Image (cartoon, rainbow, N blue to C red; front, side, top):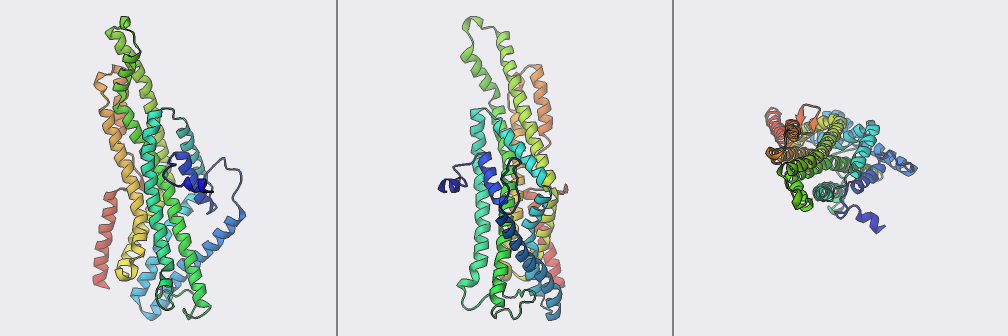
Length: 406
């Protein structure tokens, strides 16, 4: 049991283990990402997920719509409407990603298998070491995100228990058909439904984000490890030649030809790895492109509503929404940065010492690497810090405009 728990730690940062971590989490949501997993998902997970989904839909969809568009129109309480509306909107980011993943589950299974097959084909000890070094950082990033989301959810659910008196998770949010709010059994039922819906919201968010961080992080790790191989290419081959050639066979042309022959073989492996890495990222982007676009839309609308509702009322919701999109932008930015590192490594591989054939290979690699790899939201916006800042700036501008009108 303890060994199983330890696999979620930083001591186990290889790709198969990290994919197993995510697969185990997603299996609890009835989503299997392994093509070769034949045991099937236990029935209890289907029952539990269905009950949690029912609680989520009743609380953050049905009750939210009723409260905002019926109850608040009667009471004319715009602040309460904005608070509850932002609560319902921001809870849909993780749900949207999960629905998207469930719809493309066959593609995800095939993609995960491609990741694992490619990872198992790596034989170089140094390359594997460089890969694991970056993957450790990637797993730390995923664990940080999971811890933040879990802590946010725990504080949100248990906050009423440490406050004096009888308090709901959101005092102003009255669930549909559960009035008066603070009388038994309405209070207990409302608390249970809200807590269950919040649990599912957090679990969806952290599970899907962990998968995306690891999948895109592996691409980042591959690019950085390939960059190391390129930078050390000439030095490695020359050292290998000097360690193995015999003095009486020391001819300049023969030495040059032998070195370039070895370089040609290594360049082919690097080109193959780079091509496969590009393919994996393109497939990942193709699957989650609609979800990325939808989450930016949700973030924009949700943040505007949260600001209109007042920071003193929505201080728990703003970090929850922002960190979800922020982590995706961080992941996309790291892929862009790794792509730039690879581009610089191609130019720094001592290509001027190669023969004409190897120079042409390097030229093709340089041309391809100048098209930076990236993740996009619907093919419109690139997941990066620049995009995140632009969205936040637009949100604040819209907020100030609406605040002056309202």
